[in-house]
Image (cartoon, rainbow, N blue to C red; front, side, top):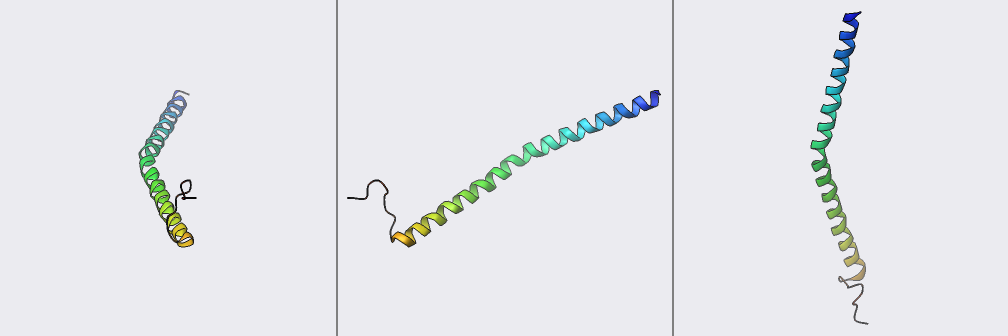
Length: 67
């Protein structure tokens, strides 16, 4: 019976260690994922500006158009 408690305790410690490792892996991946998202947003912004320039001819001010 003692051996069974030992194995259960060892299994619980192993699960805790795996959960801690998974948490730290996620923590270390967050900056990489954020940088990837930022690059995508910048790419979309420049594509939107290019599309706007293509449709309007020049970049026009939205609120100060000279009317």
